[in-house]
Length: 271
Ligand code: GLN
Image (cartoon, rainbow, N blue to C red):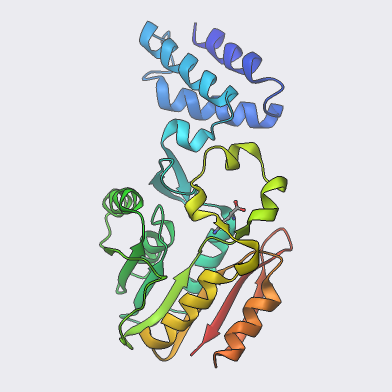
């Protein structure tokens, strides 16, 4: 019966996903649904599997269907209120961890979404003091659930970074993966991103593509201590523009790095 269900999933998703994707999905679904792999699926388990297949055929990302994913080897819950954490963002976290091993760092993540950056940094930099902001109350609910799930403490605040910030030169690190996809890049995006992920976390107008970078860098000048660092995930087409904006604002030691696919994807700069 269970074998029959696996086949059932495989057959129905054929044409929607590649064979490799289907076998990964089948494994995830079975892990999630089947209480005991050696027994038959119950009627309710079978109905759940069928519902999952229906949602997947509709193009919904598996992470939303299951309500969870992994980031940096840690479990994260996700809902359509937050972006699904991406591997590029793991590379940004890796960069931060590799050069900030000092005790008692104070870190702010702006636009935390699922909390993947803040929660992972809190877990790996055990003596750090983590703060995370988002404009979405729903996202903050998901993020604080993820802090709990991973047993870390992060101070979450409902904040709009487009509003002025107070002078507070207290942070050692400010990190952000803000919206950076321009409206004109929409046409090149996968439907399962476009139709299901939150547009508020993705898009910026073509005429103001660096909107969030500019505001966050400005806020960072007020909120970073002297020699504090800023880390950004960026649109692969905007590396040089982000670097030159940071240079114009007086940041130093600006470094642009590529992701594993060879695209300009992250920037670090020092106040
Ligand atoms: N990397 C995401 C994507 O390409 C975008 C993330 C963002 O806008 N911050 O879908």
